[in-house]
Length: 127
Length: 374
Image (cartoon, rainbow over all chains, first blue to last red; front, side, top):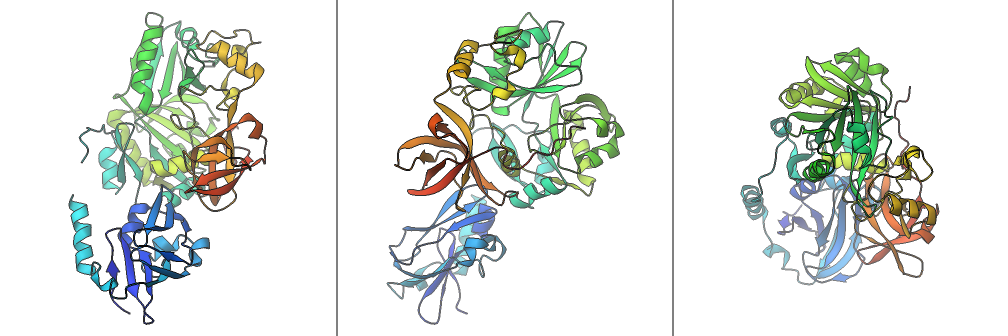
């Protein structure tokens, strides 16, 4: 399994063997959101980086999930339609959101690595 | 960090110790959830018993032989004939018939009434009482003297009866002065979750002792404001400032049931409260919009502020409260809707992120209440 990359919006990305990239939200994000009750998944289409591709609704509020890189969504996690709690229970595994084909194959490696993301979380916590 | 200094309830340190996530609410630093999380806290309350800190709410004592008569000039509710040892739901109205706040009124006996008002409105309510009732009765705010705990859920009776058996025989809306752990408490069999349970007014200095004792009981879990909101929403209960305010009347808010028969247009003590004419006129002629229950027909939660449209896309209302109901297992909402669209099962749509989510006008409460009526 390839190492994870992260965005400042608390999404994680994992490069798959076929060049596609799986996206979810981090443990920090799901903890901040609280119990997830609904996930509006993206359409199987092209999204620009930063576009609101998905929405996650917790018991408290709705939050946008943004397209981490420009690309084409290939698959969504249908399990979340019936079991949105997977986002809380296993955010880095069964709680994945979608898989997409990035327009720029090298862009993923330029995102935050685990150390940089951990520093970001720590900075947030200390703020 | 916020510049505003938030108030703390007497249980603030306990909330932190329990690992609560704190948020500002009505000027107080309050627990929105504990480590258990909103969903499980909600379910625990419906299954066993939840302990809520509602000490941010305002308690005010009115005393004097004319106190009940005086209070009746501000609320459309029968206070004069409120029996000793009973509590009743009421609201302060303004001259237009709008709701200034909703409250609970209990008759303590000895010409004393205890009022419980909303946190965000308590200073304004106190000023309102002083402005209109000064000289007619004594008005004593207990904002810092007394804390308020709610113990809610089917096991609440078993738990509280361990401290004093006499509370078990109380029925819904009964009110009694009791000693709990030697503390002079007022206990009412009521709450805001739709469950059986109690609200306990306790001297501020004894609140933590009592809360810790209750939390030691195996059935009891601390519950935050997040679950309090989803519980009251399933019970179809209004949250002031969201589901009603000074621009909505009791008729529009579907709270006609709370206007006592003797205070209505054909009652023995008709009117005599602010906005009576407007409220009676609305009761007689009807209103343009009303609060109704709304059930989204998809899993998408529909939240406060969402516009409600009819089949042609015309805006016919607005959602005032909405979210996910853990016991219902589905999203639910309340909204103000033009009268033509308020019949049960009327299909409507809420606009969520630019898309229509189909809704049906639904009866309330969404989850059957389990008040103990003896």
